[in-house]
Image (cartoon, rainbow, N blue to C red; front, side, top):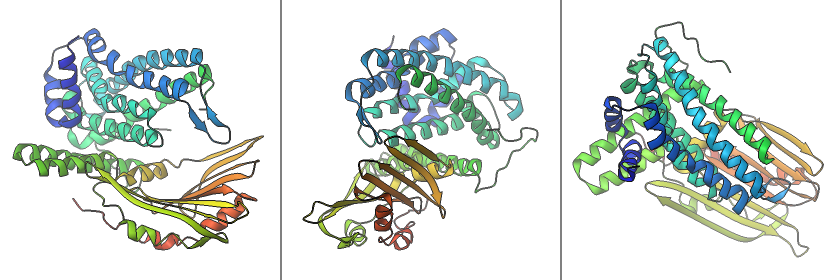
Length: 412
């Protein structure tokens, strides 16, 4: 195994995909070499880190508390995840190859396997994020989103499909990948005991989607990624370190679906934290804005309580450059309605806004709303009922917050 070559390929496909896909398309290799030198190595990342998170670190399960998968079940799940991931790559490649003529591309199973394997790089690398508290899911979503972009960018080069048909080709291929991922999740969940559609018409020469439809939004998303990629390449050629940093930040923002966004300044976010909430005076407050490589997130936290020990906590988060993750969640129409002997958990849409609520019979709950596909407002605490938390959240100026959804969003 040539470790240097492996790392160079990972860096190339993640940081300079347009150039790297050209090299990949012309490479001579075999199925066994692809698996031995790349797929079998990268696919270990999510399997291993999933085991570390589930069996060694553990995680919080809503309504049930802190939970770890047993070591034996965790190892079994890791092995099954790994084995099925290896099979998944090949099956998705078969789908890509089979669909090739439909989208004006050339059938070539080896090229299809190269395309899928290298496009999956971002999702595999993002598997490391499973061990990061709170941000793990966001990192996984970002990795999946970037893999979609890599597939979109690679199909015209490796499979020879017309660029204008790459979005539809990508969308149908991703549907197959999602279905296979759900199957893998179900099988692994059955082993570990962890909690765990039709495609577009293919008959026409050109597939067009309404810009507000899920596939239409995917097309717009892919276009933004392509534009960001071109800026990164231009910045690299210029040799300007500052320009390279800014372009890379914009690229990461585009990969997360949010583009370049400056999160609200702490003093502005602070104005949405009231002096009292639910009839309780404010006892603590903290507001901060953090950023790295051009990405920003701002958060305000406050507690409200009295001498009797009654406390309500408030969190207002400006997703900033990662706001696209909220939009993607909304686009997917995520819904949940789960009830147990301990309580319930619901996710739904109310007046166009995503809502999540949890309650356990011990008297503790949380209530969250997504505002303007950019902000989240959550109240939690030990109170009489979920209705108390709903009433408390309604005291926040949600319409005023939503009015700021485009503030700091940079064009281009």
